[in-house]
Amino acid sequence: MGVGIEVINLNAWYGTNHTLQDINLNMPANHATALIGPSGCGKSTFVRCLNRMHETNPVGRVTGTVRIGDLDVYKDTKAVEIRRRVGMVFQRPNPFPTMSIYDNVAAGLKLNGYSNRRALDEIVERSLKNSALWDEVKDDLKKKSGASLSGGQQQRLCIARALAVDPEVLLMDEPASALDPVSTSKIEDLIFQLKSQYTIVIVTHNMQQAARVAEKTGFFLNGRMVEFDSTHKIFTNPSDKRTEDYITGRFG
Amino acid sequence: MRALTDGTVTGLAILATLIVVAPLIAIFVYLIYMGASSLNLDFFTQIPKPVGESGGGMANAIVGSAILLALASLIGVPIGIGAGIFLAEFGRGSKLANGIRFTADVLNGVPSIVMGLAAYALIVSEQKHFSAFAGGIALGFMMIPTVCRTSEEMLLMVPNVIREAALGLGVPNWRSVLSITVKTASPGIITGCMLAFARVAGETAPLIFTALGNQFWSTSLNEPIAALPLQIYVYALSPYDDWHRLAWAGSLVLIVLIVLAVSLVRFVASRGVLKGAS
Image (cartoon, rainbow over all chains, first blue to last red; front, side, top):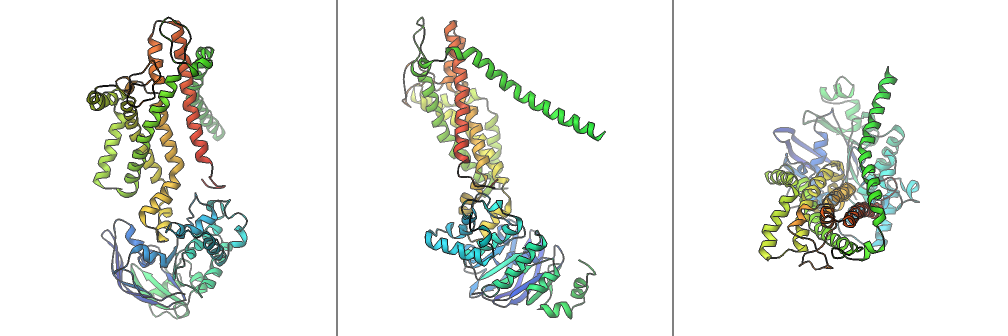
């Protein structure tokens, strides 16, 4: 089951560049929250702070509090522990090129020392079904490399890989931006289904996409969160002039 | 005009390729011409005959070279790959890494005879006798910089999104490096090891003061050992015609064995690679 996410006074830097300033928001459990805003506004940095990927950059720095369910992300918790509970799907599909489809999905468990083969078979099947890829790959699970799939299939494989470690939250950083319209709509359908089991945070450039999949939407601009509200309100009656300018296409 | 330019560039590229391949083919053909007639079963099963007797082979030198190269690889491959992993994955940008990289590049430029002299001073003169051990170490240390730098380059070519994918699954960094990054780069790393192997396989200079060479059977690491390049060197400089022919045959065998060893490793490494994996 998904858990809620609470962010209090989050600040982030790349070197001396203050990319996120005083972010505060609450994302409800088992809902999808969309983050929109122009390029470079900090929305990707924001999701990377939620699973502590930001600190893998040598010049990345974070202050503030993030709570995911009962976990205090930046206090008394190991980064690897957080990342097992907070799955991530990246902008560019990034399956492990040397691994079969099966091993890609099982990678998170295998690399963390899990080796019960029968259970792995079940988890791989369930994850691929949950990511709507099972029917397309079930005959070449161990024969084909993850890299041999099409871009859209690769992205669903990456979603399956993230689901296999049984996270509570799924972070998606522009998951469909490198995909064609058909694959994009498959990913969106998938997000819709996954909401019942996971809390989803999705960064997107595509405002229609935010409107289609998310109950809540946050608008980021220049490292600050300008407005956070129900998606319906953001797109029909935003309270901030800058949000309105952005969604009506006056800039960005 | 565009077609003309296209034709010219293509032509020049083909010409350049031919110039690259031509010497190799020429050497190979010449070696076969000069050496093939002296190749027979004796060459692979007999040790050298004393001066004046005809016949004899290089069995001890073939086995000796195999032992020396195995010892060299045992030293050069793990240390080289380990250092490459450090440079690319853990020490990236640090002063220590820059120092190691610089040292590796200098080591790569050290003439092979100097490597032999160093091994002589540090091992042979300490132990007071020549040995296969000293020869293997000299060759092994010659392999390190090539293996290290190519491993580093190949690891740096692994896209960062692959590392992030592993870290994002909650995999510890060291595990991600060993199981994901190194595995993804392994075809290139293996190529680097093969290059280093092929390069030292033909080295004579570092063996002159270390392995020394041996006219008799010896597989002991603690005694002087025969090696193909050494044997070729001695025979080629001798005044006897049948030794000259044996030297040509030895050169042919050396090159064929290197090609076989490299192909074998490639073949083994390519098995298990999946459809569509690059």
